[in-house]
Length: 628
Image (cartoon, rainbow, N blue to C red):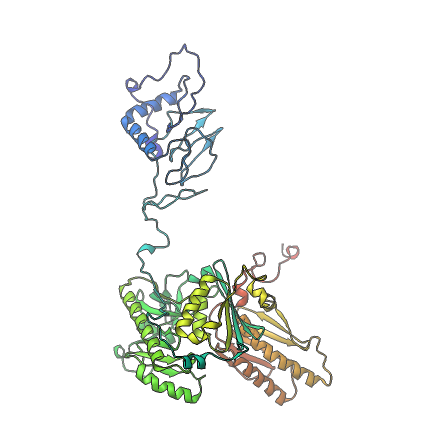
């Protein structure tokens, strides 16, 4: 009830006012103590003020409605001096609750604490409570959409109708398709095949170059890849990853605007920032366009408000939105399915004889209307294993297509699996001596997945019991100390030289210095040896820090061309161990090496840090002495 409705006019018919005023000759009595079950403070026995008389007339006009409302409140359990009833503890009977807002209801205090009874406004003036001036029937049981307003200390703001609007109509949005990882009837391999794929072992222990350590803290998951004892890769999955770490997810997007001058379109995929789709990533039906040699312009293919199916190829970074493609792909353990495509291929990392064998198998298992790319993990697999992997992905794509046909607005269609499972699917092989996980639930999921897709390697998945071990898993395997060095701008080389790594908005710059390396013979030899060490360490740091984009390296100048060429070859060889695509250009006239590395998401430093608030990330604090 509004303020106007709760304060009736003063010109009320006095004949209708009940006699609540004692004789004038009577002495004022002390206020009656509130009784259990009162829905409002009892009126004083003293002579009423003019306001009290007028509001008493208002109570008479309300008639039995107020009494009925009071009884309904009692039935709801709001009486009894502060009992809990559905939406939190309600304070009645004159108890002082201060300014606490329980269930989003307003409470006020004037000279004495005014009580809030079921959302009614009560006030006191000069120490006396105005019994007739209470606003009755003005309870707000929730907002118009069924939810209570929440504010202050909100101890009772539950939904009462499920109708609260939170980020759009989430209740009606279909649930996205999850990755299909397991078959209902896993394939059973014979002992001979399991032994062949089990990898090398020594004294009953698995042998391999790499080890994967997984640490779970709350909702965050960290993965550290060790080569020997050296940390070479690090990944972080955080609770905000539904909007930041979305690489590989498939969406229904709505074209917001098409920019012919940029040959791009901005797409709404129901994330905080619109994603970008470039012309080169647009898939078009050639039969619907005019026959011409040049590719169609983006404005001829995409129109504003058009709904399209797309996949994220690059996570949003800083102020930039995600990058999209319309050429969707679904990765499995052994193959990658490319729906509605004629693409077929086999990983170039496999030996020639194995590629030939897999090509023959591919002709038997490839699906109609879809393309298939065979992965490196398919080395040595049987035709049945390939066929099962393809069938699993085709089934998954059919579910995504069915969900897309029902969508009429932007939204998520398919979500990639958890980070650890995704990494196992992409990378786990006999080269890994162990996968050590310190979370029991995640260990069970990974173990089940590995037993289904790579049973010969299941014994290499191990559980690290934090309660039984003296040190956390990252400290036990010396990961934390290497991470601390990996976020430093200065990196020391074995012979005393150093690297300085600086990131800017446009590119990353790496400077090579001799530092404490003074050599033993001549300057050219000292510089050459220092640059060889730097080439190896730079390749490792790029992987570890996950640095992407344009990278410029300033090696120390060398006079002999053969030395420069050898440093370049050493650098390219070290980069060949990086699975992320890189491209290195020739040394420039200034002695600079220019290269690019594909950027998928935020790097190591960004994933474990936040922008400095005082300097806003500039690294300096401006002096007020000279600028004011």
